[in-house]
Image (cartoon, rainbow, N blue to C red; front, side, top):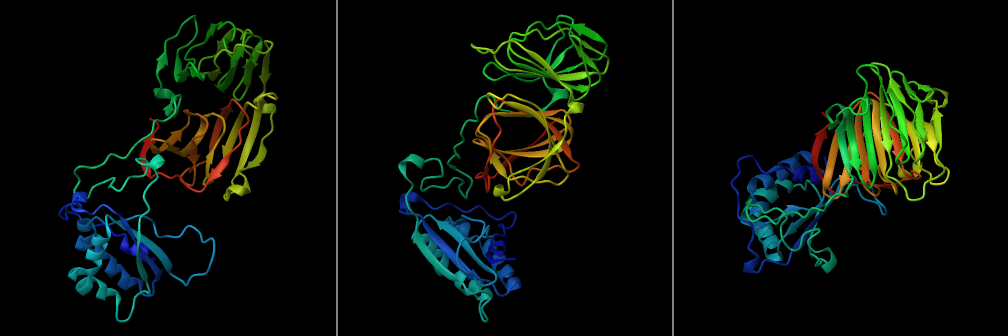
Length: 413
């Protein structure tokens, strides 16, 4: 246990709220107190950390920690065992000095780590650099994002998530479109004029209907039973791709069958109408891997069902083994996924804050391009198979962390 873990103990429950410093009194030039050095006696430092937390000195003087002192990595230099760095922000030098010179700290708390020394620390105070005008309000501006007395808090700014974002949908609880034209009712996973729609059809009793021509490029993927489209009898794992303007064919489903429909918005200049069936059972699983450059190679099995040679758009299956982890990543194109089987905990690092979702079979998401997601929190306990669809070539840029703290955990119903 390093110094930081020892000092980050919370104030005891029920401790009295203490007033925050008053900038009007002249305490408006923040400083950073930096504590750095090796720990020699962890047990005594634990008692020292608890004493600071229980004293209320930091709360009274507006001090708070800026970093998690557990080192991620060292880029240069050597340090003795147990070396760590902790940064405490105070609203002004006078408050930092008041903490250090207080009778409570000097006579009751500091002696807990002395004679002999429980750690050799260098304690320095630095002025905080003023924020540039272009980032004022985004990371705080010489003020507290959360005040210690709980009043007059400066709201943390939030930024709107992009339009079209759909996360944590469970097909069984999605909005329903009633049956029409002889066809079955459908669950609306996504419907957006600019990005298209995703629907799930479940056939409770044998039915037949003709959806006419595809109003936009359309994919139909069978998830249960037998579905006949035109003259093609399709079973689980088969894919029908119909380009804009081509006839889809009469759809006939047996009781208990189900299929997904993904439909893109109409295009001004569509390709020559065409229709093709891909037999999933005839396609091979291939071994894929998250790039080693990401720092976390993760083996995956991939079955590529369809790829547009012109745009790189694709639809494929991804099978993930239990316990596999992936790094934080960003794609240059939108990505939508439907969990065919298994479970998956998926983290999203959004402009409005981090969100975590627990997906089970028939869970769905649609993520516009440029959003950070996945990361070490994301994994599967029992294995997972995703159907993934993208409007362009799927590449990734990897990042070491999500810059915002977890905000909420969502579970698909």
